[in-house]
Image (tube, rainbow, N blue to C red):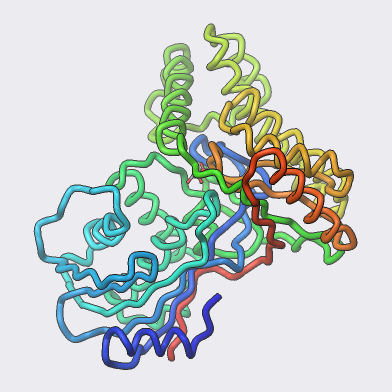
Length: 395
Ligand code: GLA
């Protein structure tokens, strides 16, 4: 995390004036409830200390100038320009927010210096960046003291971020990541109703360790879209026998009752679709269980659910990869972690393990060494810390 003085200095260096506000938007891990947010499921994300950070000021023009440390250049956006089709770069996110977030009509320009320590895959760097842009955009539009925006406004901004991903960037992602980034903390989030419960943090005796496999999420975009399409195919088959389900805009597959879930499994002829549906139903049940184990501080129980979740994502949903399987397996086999699973979309990126504090160092050494020996890749293991939702502070 960058300290405020350095951020302000960097801003001044590039924009020759002092910033008026700083803004921080966290990344997230997901404890459990993977690949069910786009089926209306219950998920358990946790906002983390790693974040996107920015310093900005309104510049009195309609232009937006952004310096990103990742690309070491200032890019200028004119909100009234013709919208460019997405080009697969970070500028797409800015354009998407300006376009869908009503900024084009207002055009209140700002200078922004932005940095991030969310380089590992699977920690939701894009939702974090979008959350930061959505907050600044909201500030520009309303002039409101954004540190006071309430939960429903935060969820509205999360929906905007999702819309940018879905409609502008072209990734059919769910609501979990932007919602987590904007509401912060550890929560259960019902992705159908957007109701959420703030949960007690993991007890101080245990930590969630983030394990970066160092493997880029190569198939993430195409594999993810393929899974979403498979869920639509399942929905279409349900709709054929139950026409009222056909009108729904988003899938509600994860919300089916036990009976309806069983009927769906016997309806599906394709083994692949059956397996996908099996993951959705079992993962939803695991999240409900996980909320109970957490409330009872039953860490062993939580660990077992995490292991089962990984297995289901590997076998039934097929979104893991050899390195995620290896690192989680090494973590479990060490006998030092209570549970381990991939987190996020999969196909590379990060896994998480639940580890008692007294065993953190031994776990880190054992897993990192064995993983490096077998893959030639040095993994990064870091102990996660829970963080608040995205926020703006006056400088
Ligand atoms: C990505 C998506 C989320 C969610 C996860 C998998 O992070 O952005 O919406 O689907 O994958 O749980």
